[in-house]
Image 1 (cartoon, helix red, strand yellow):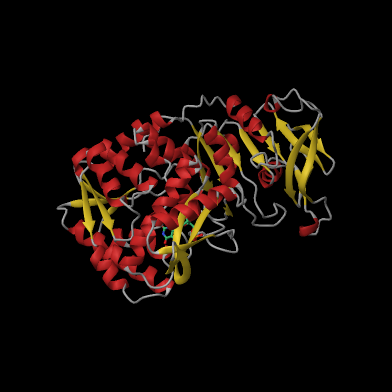
Image 2 (spheres, protein in one colour; image 1 turned 90 degrees about the vertical axis):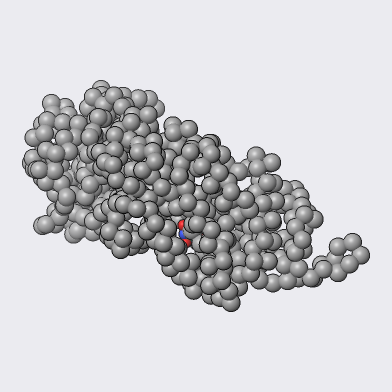
Amino acid sequence: MTQTHDRLLIIDFGSQVTQLIARRLRELSVYCEIHPYQNVDDAFLADFAPKAVIFSGGPDSVTRAGSPRPPASVFDLGVPILGICYGQQVMMQMLGGEVHGGKNTGGGGTAEFGRAYVTPTDASLPLLDGWFDDAREQVWMSHGDHVAKLAPGFDVFGTSPNAPFAITADTSRNFFAVQFHPEVHHTPNGAKLYENFVALAGFTGDWTMAGYRDQAVAAIRDQVGDAKVICGLSGGVDSTVAAALIHEAIGDQLTCVFVDHGLLRKDEAAEVVGMFRDHMNLHVIHADEADLFLGELEGQSDPETKRKIIGRLFIDVFQKYADQIDGAKFLAQGTLYPDVIESVSFSGGPSVTIKSHHNVGGLPEKMGLKLVEPLRELFKDEVRALGRELGLPASFIGRHPFPGPGLAIRCPGEITRAKLDILREADAVYIDQIRKHGLYDEIWQAFCAILPVRTVGVMGDGRTYDYACALRAVTSVDGMTADYYPFSHEFLGETATRIINEVPGINRVTYDITSKPPGTIEWE
Ligand code: XMP
């Protein structure tokens, strides 16, 4: 992609929190990329042309032979460098200082983990603007090794009881090195250090969604030429924004396929297809394959079998419709930056759960299609910002996530059309309640599950024998961990009454108060 913005390079030495550095910088409208140290050589540096470089932390010890290093030429680029924790130690050792091993590495040094306080020895350093107003700053330390002798040209600017060289700098070269992690929440004023660092490196905060949109549109045109592109729509935010962006770039050359497996929520297919066709004027094939999916799912009650059937059919159906689009050469996917980082990370290897494109996994190779992934550089909240920039309705951008297998995993046990219909109605009432009470945006995900049990009840003068349902609502940042949402008793009581009165087939409502872990968000 032709670059029109300044770029900052983060060299990753394997810290658990490297992604947070990128988050802090993007919040400052600074464009940055994370690359594992093995991928960074002289040619890479020349090509990337960073305006500044950050060395991340990492689990290794620089005192160990063969431990990770950046290429020495990085120090000759003439750009500011900030080293964090392991990055600080790498910098000191490569530039002529000394690092001693901590307890873990047999050197008997001073290990330090957790909260610590740094006091200034010289607060005039521009990196420290806005720091030390209260004499000391809380920081987060996590190191076994420590710097024992500074490299020539470096001075100390801040110190902590266990890290005499907590903040150091060679001001003539704009090299900075800190022992703690400014990117984590436990260093409350950490963002200010990044702000100061990018300001002195001359970044102007030119990374905006309006700019990104123009640049991405040009790049898509460049990549695709006059070829045709197909895109699988799920109704979720990522594929929607990807499709909208590609449509802006190449118009009618894009065809979207919306696979309707009959496991969608009430009115969902009509809403999604309506929005794309009417609001965005985009060419969408509505693949109504409910009979196929529900037919094959009949009699199946094992969760993994259900998922496998849906996954296999999804690929078959998508391929069937894609084959009808003459001359399609590209497949669009809503891959996000966290997926990209995970799949190149030297410590973790390829991610095991890349959810945004698991639905069409393996298809590009099978069909000989090339990928268009216009969101590869973005974090989830940036995708939402881009969606707003592209004029997508706010209600759509703020939608809760919805899983690929749809209501199948909210209907534990055997799936029947009758149960799905009941579930759709109950879910619609529940979501309506949440919206009416103004809680939708506070909740990461909310839904109803229909349980495979029937219970006895009494309505009016009669006995009922109907299904029980469970309400689920969780708060979460990324779906990896979650807490149940603390609804008031009034809300729960009112919702249960409404569901039982308005939804034939349900006579008992429960609220699921399991967090994740040990539970999962979905029931299957
Ligand atoms: P769990 O149930 O694993 O869900 O705690 C975490 C998040 O992932 C969603 N989810 C899926 N999304 N295909 C998807 O696209 C799937 O097979 C799938 N399973 C779970 C779930 O809705 C929640 O947001």
